[in-house]
Amino acid sequence: MKKVRIALLGLGNVGRGVWRILNSNKEEIMKRSGYEVEVAKILVRDLEKERGVNTPREILTTNFEDIINDDSIKIIVEVMGGIEPAREYMLQSMDKKKHIVTANKMLLATGGDELFKKADSEGVMFHYEASVAGGIPIINGINESLTANKVEKLYGIVNGTTNYILTKMELEGLDFNEALREAQEMGYAEADPTSDIEGYDAQYKLAILSSLAFGTKIEVENVYREGITGIKSIDIEYAKEFKKVIKLLAIVKENDGKLELRVHPTMISKNHPLANVYDSFNAVFIRGNAVGDLMFYGRGAGDLPTGSAVVSDIVSILRNNMDIENLVPVLKNNLWNKEIKSINDIESKYYIRITVEDKIGVLGEVTSLFGEKNVSLLSVIQRGRDKEHDKKVTLVLVTHYTNEGNIREALKEIYKLDSIYKVNNIIRMEEFR
Ligand code: NAP
Ligand code: HSE
Image (tube, rainbow, N blue to C red; front, side, top):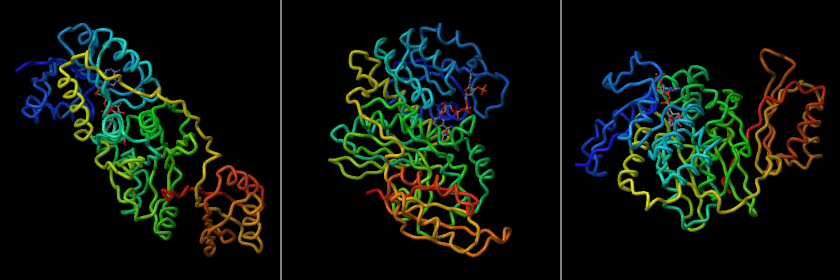
């Protein structure tokens, strides 16, 4: 049996998952890859930290030089996260002809091109299946299995932390912060959970997926982003009334050669398969012009699911026998140039919750301002007075499909009305048409 020595950069949630899988599935990995995989070194910051895994003390190091200068190490598994020093370590590793596996979506989405080009020029393999949707084989799915298709639309629940929080709020009535704390304890959240709850993590993942699915380079700034911190339990209750659920969706659609790319909380029908994706599960729903609709579903975060994707990437490299002659270029994102739509040019239905003064004529003022901006309303709900503020009432409006620019124009005018206290929330409604 051939032996290969690898190094892990990081022994946190994902690193521990990788270590456990390499140990528990040793036999399967040997048979499938033709190699015995030895973890020769693991880079960490703190040698004394209690990690709950049986890594021998002598393979831990805080010095990257121990890894980069060891020519017997052939594969670098970057599971430390962040931009620097992860970027620099991967570039240096490729200089030394070491193959790379990474789970780092932030780095791939913001500076991936440099790494992909380096991998091409050095003739090393560069795999990143774990960077999107944890254990779901979506990168390979798009890169290998859907290449016969023109992808028309892609909708993803690609952040486990926010899906976990929304699930707990919807099904158990848990408060946002409590649900976030649980997601952190489970190892789903990023080191700084702002990335999850404000939608940056999903924005990175959508940039990566869209680059692959549409064969074009997507700059992360071109992906419109909103997180879930504005979602209140009252919005979840209204969604239930409409037989809908709220999910943080990553959406890309192509219309007339233009792409719209957006990440935001979205109300979707309870009957859609994505509505039943709960907990830390992720799903990616794709419409291809040949295959039709399909959905990939699985655990999107956590040590073992993510470790599963990382270890599969290691096995892919080994199966290729580390043979650079047979390399497929790592990212085909330069096939087409596509124009990106501004968020003002998209069309959607909208749920709008407003707090207004409870006085005669206010409803008429609001609805006529929407009318003036060509926004057609599907329904208006006005409930009794707010218990705490006896002069205020809540209006919930749902629009027909309309242009977002018109909605924004109408809201600018509505804000100016004396009888408006607050536009509390605006949530797009998706009908997958
Ligand atoms: P984590 O639990 O915070 O672990 C990070 C590890 O990297 C720790 O062991 C840390 O060492 C080490 N590290 C960080 N900076 C370092 C530095 N400058 N020098 C040496 N060691 C350093 O993170 P994680 O959740 O495993 O995530 C790792 C990567 O996988 C990130 O890119 C993340 O976005 C991605 N990812 C995570 C998940 C998930 O479910 N968690 C899923 C998919 C992808 P110490 O332990 O000594 O501090
Ligand atoms: N923090 C990420 C999530 C990890 O919650 O989905 C998986 O990429």
